[in-house]
Structures are given as C-alpha cells and as structure tokens.
Length: 124
Image (cartoon, rainbow, N blue to C red; front, side):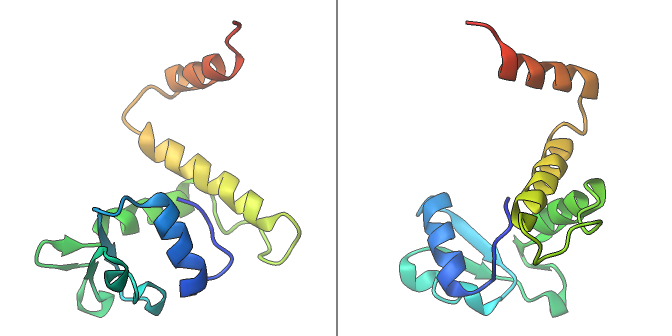
C-alpha cells in the first residue's frame, strides 16, 4: 500500500504491472484508471460502490477496511499538505505505520517492536 501522485491509468497501470502477479484477480471500484486491466490480461472484477461494497462474491471490503484503519490509526490527514515538499514520503510513513499496526493488531505490540529493533540492529 502506497500513495500515488495521481489516479490516472498512466500512473496506476505501470504500478499494477510491477506489483501484482499476472494471475491475480483484481477487484476495483470502477475507477476509469483501471479500465484497461482486462485488456492487459488481468482478471478484473468491478464493484460499483453506489450498490454497496460487494456484488456476489466480488467485494472491495478488505481494502476499504484496511484503508479506513490506516487513515484512522495513523492520523493520515493531520498536518500533511499535499503540495509541500516531501509530502508523499510523509504520507508513505503514515501508510506504513497504519499497515504495520493493522498487521500486528492481535499481537503484543512490545514484542513486535523488539522484533523490529532486532531486525534493524542485529550484529553480524
């Protein structure tokens, strides 16, 4: 999960091709920047949110929930001006923090922090 400068197909499709396995099923909300996914060989399922966040077995609930938690847990919107220098890096820091918190939410936070420190500073 990471921020992008814009949501155009020219930005989104190369990121998708670099980060998503060609056999993956991609679920989107119908944003036009994703319109060419099927033509590029991906299985593309579209869930239009006006009708809810699922259509049969197709759903965007997982990513919507994750994004909601990242914004809430990391105070995503506080203090970052979109056009200020370094803003994307600061947003990425908040996203990383929120994703990490979501990942460890059922674990002991202190033990997780010890693991992070050990991973970063283990002597060879």
